[in-house]
Image 1: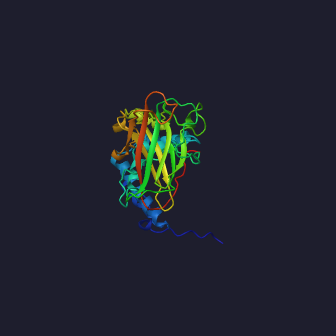
Image 2: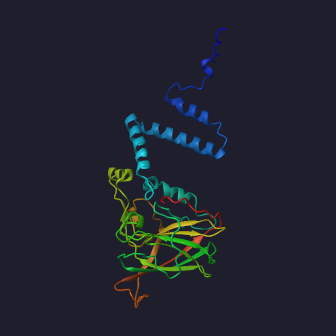
Image 3: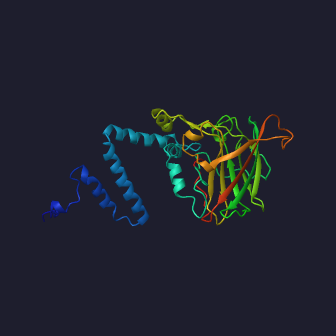
Amino acid sequence: MGIKQATVPPRNNLNVITDESSVTNVVLDAMARTPDARLREVMVSFVRHMHAFAREVRLTEEEFHLGIDVLNRIGQASNASHNEAVLFSDAIGFSTLVCLLNNGKNGATETAAALLGPFWRMNSPLTPNGGSIVRSDTPGPALFANCLVTDTQGHPLAEVEVDVWQASPIGLYENQDANQAEMNLRGKFTTDSDGRFWFRSVKPAGYPVPTDGPVGDLLRAQDRHPYRPAHLHFLCFKSSYKTLITQVFVSGDPYLSSDAVFGVTEHLIGNYRQGEGAPPAADVTGPWFVFDYTFLMERGKAELPKPPIK
């Protein structure tokens, strides 16, 4: 018995690529059957924009391979204590854009939320109000924070879990620095019946983002500095409220208008002022500072982000 040859459809029925102008439509046709409507919407738009980008800049093969190499290096530079992908997204302003697109509804200002950043850790030590997050010898002026959490109508919110974390005054988070104790400058507080939480720390200082990977190469190639203005990180969590992730910056910092990761918005410049008179603690010597801030939380789904590091 002879082998029956498959019937080849006429060429004009084949969805094949004829030249560079036909590539995009062939790819989009292949994606048209994607069952998940949101995945289909996102991927169709992604392909359209990526193809348009390549056409706009007339991307060369050498540049294409360089871009693939950068993606590979971003993955290779990420580990349990550092997330280069988040840092790269931050350094091109993409993280801030996504943040502002997804926050500020129901009366909350668009600046109520900010970057998570690559250094948040889960399970920070539970710390009573008034306690200190300084867990090892950490130089720097003492800082006394007095904060309030309200809803968008100004009503105090009790029982809000608030994660606080910051870099040390030498510019390193504890997971980057073997000289700092585990969970130094990290703590988790709970607001009282008046919506308040308060704690002691050290005044934050600005610092450079890591520059030993692809992000550092990008900053140098663009003649950009790597510095972030001094800030504290906060994550506020309460059932039936949208999780608020934010950073509050020190006014007067020289890098407020040129943050390497574009995280500064006007309402995130906080009130850090030098204390006057007797300090709140007897062991304080030299200048000390007070930080006051009110956080607004809007109604929504309470959901914790995936930690960028372990």
